[in-house]
Length: 203
Length: 409
Image (spheres, chains in turn cyan, green):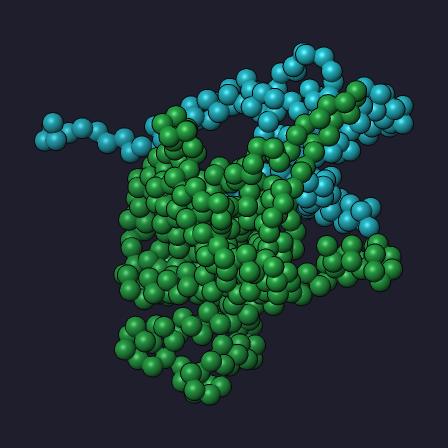
């Protein structure tokens, strides 16, 4: 069942990605991007990573692509609607893309996954999902863990270890990101504000 | 839940049981997706008629014209399915399906009564809002791919409106979450049992105001009047659905009425006590009944959300439509700052109360009819027991008619 669902989501994600590259119409590209990103969210749900999947849907599918189409609708006219590259660009892009693909395939094939899994098990102890939590993994046990880790508490590391050392969570990156987002918001508001020149009569 | 029952009692193989359970869930959800929409389309016409001093539909199906929606549906199926020459045919044909799938997908996470939910997820509210927000994608694509100026204007207005109104929607929806301590809609509903002052709308003044902001924002995000700029008939012919006909056109409306019901049910679960009547003895009696009590809870939830939908219809036929700049001003200059203020207020409220009064709520401290999740006696809170290398989160349930659920512990 899971492998069947994985196949469905993986094929749609890859097919959508290929269709983004192959289609030449900007809005259709955006539509295929939605299919691809939505299937990626499905893959996250298969991994029981429900918060990441939901964030994928909300931010990429619901936010970014909608803004993309909105931008295209506001600006699109004639030459920008269809994108078709010259043969030289096609060659450059395919060389870069194929090189990257070969690096990926090479590095995936080089790793001895069984040995790594054994190492990982040894290092991490019982995995996160096997620990007793409030809710079964299928209902999403990630949210509380993620939230606590972002506020600087790592239940999954600190509980039951016996020693008094506490591992640090991700409070500092979280704060940096939030301040960064605030700066971006203020900057966007400043840029978007209508810059009216003050005329004499208004002074 | 159903798949467990099938594997345990009827000895069905797990894969088949999962598929069967999925089919049963989807069929039930389809019924509760379609039937309210069916009823509310009739109600819209009837209420509109009454408000405008007309009778509304009277003929189809007996006295009140209550089969009018069915007649409409049959008429729409028979209509020709057109696509204009200037349209981008693939996107034009796909757009209604995106709308209907998005508004249907949101129902997966909506509990209809205690534990009656298709997918119980810890991120239920977040995911439901995320999927509901995909509806705008279908509408933008419909507006864009129609190849018509009216549709393009409608789609652009809808995009601008939805992207802006999602901000106050998210902030006001988070206020009940921070009171309940969970994004699981089932847990949020369970928190509000007991007397009606346990409902989250009466939790603090900020939550009380947040409900009205939430309701206003859901009006706008469903493009209901006075925010129905995307389909403003007097300016844009039909807005984003000008070029659509037949079933594809009706899909937009089915999606809209289902989304109306969805946001009303969401408002009921988040603020108005969900499936609880608000009268503690009655709720206790419901719980004693077991399964039948859940059916009664379902009826309560449907009644409350039906009332909210009626309110939406009432507002639509009472208030005039705003201009697009007024819509954006309402959102960005008023609703966003108000909801940010309410959020901050709701965060500080329990801190201030516990500093001054030593309690976190103002609700009367009665023995009977307490909320289920919140003030569980300290002895029965989950205790973290740390043995050699393993950790247990230990749950002890208090005795009594009400069983504690996981909440703000």
